[in-house]
Every structure is written in structure tokens, then in C-alpha cells.
Image (cartoon, helix red, strand yellow):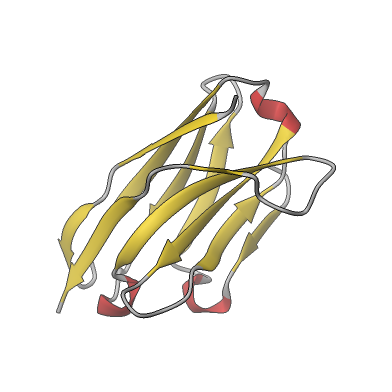
Length: 119
């Protein structure tokens, strides 16, 4: 079974940066597209960014374009989310997720990591 373990969350001031990491195990990493989602208190979970199996295609929600960068290292079985110029509205629990390449639905989820941005 696929296992995902996030790390890198924390408390940061507005304008600061954090890098989230997600370690993938249990299957062949390059057979999976990867995504980062977030859920703020009282809000629905939303996709923040996605990357295809090879890293050549990415997606970002409009609110993070130009500030966040998703990347993957298939040799290390790890996906990253570099978050710059953080804003208080970025505060949420961030989740890493995986989907088999042939599917659009994300089937595997990490436990989440808290990101808190103070103003």
C-alpha cells in the first residue's frame, strides 16, 4: 500500500517561506501523480498544486500562483511544496496525496501538516 508522510509545516510570519516535503513509499513513485491539498478551519479541502509523474506538468490554484512551487524527485520518492511570500490566508492543514497515473482521483493521503502564518 502507498504510504505518504508529510513534514516541514510550522509557524511563520507573513511574507516568510516554508518548504513541505512528502515521502512516498509502498509502490513505484513514478507511476503516480502527486498533489498538495489544504483545509482551513470551517472550509472545504482544496487542491493547492499538482504535478504529473515526471514533473513536467504542474497545476496551481489561482491564489498561490507565483508564490508556491511544486516539484518532485523521483530518485528520492519525494514531492515538495515550496511556499514563498506566505499570507495569513494560507493557514491550513496541508495534505500530500497520490493518484495512479491513469486516474484523476487521488486515492492515497498523508496525515497532514499544520501551516500557520501570523500577520
